[in-house]
Image 1 (tube, helix red, strand yellow):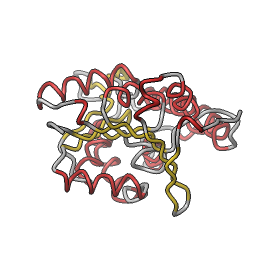
Image 2 (cartoon, rainbow, N blue to C red):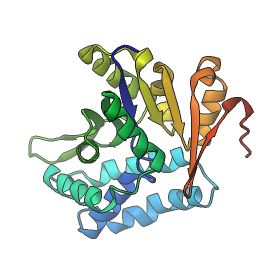
Image 3 (spheres, rainbow, N blue to C red):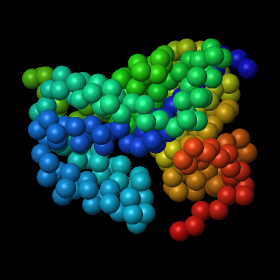
Image 4 (cartoon, helix red, strand yellow):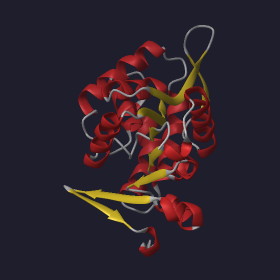
Length: 243
């Protein structure tokens, strides 16, 4: 099979929800950011998604926008502390399928790489917890005073993830056709398309739509849906999404 690896998104793929949401709530609890940011800007988007009146991608992007502004002026030390606490308390709330796949890849001797739009401080904690070999996350840049400036280098979109994977593949001399990828949103589309063995884990409607429009990806992707204590493997050719 050549020199392979497994690329894992985190939020909604390994972890059952969005870890950045947990970080946001914890930072409010510690009075690091203003509670009004959640109630006035993020919560409405969350409620729309939770009631299935809006899509997950819209909620996630709103969360990232507000978060980027909210952390301006905060020390990375505080972020690292919050990230560690979140993973200590919430890090085991993962999908059974994803946990078993991580174990399987380790047994096969594959490199494990986390690629996530979450803050890199948080991604590093997840990677450490699950014994991954490498990771990439969104970088929140620091100004000359050692505080977050509000500028970011994103890792949630398809282009950023593609570039990260190409860099990792080149440095480790990996064979993409022998690699695996696991994702759940449209931001993971390119990552899934690049590898020989793609898995969509509880995919969003936006990701399913993009997969259905790509003949090459449709042939090789596996759709995994986990509900309660049952894991379903679906055939994309026979999968319908209802509005």
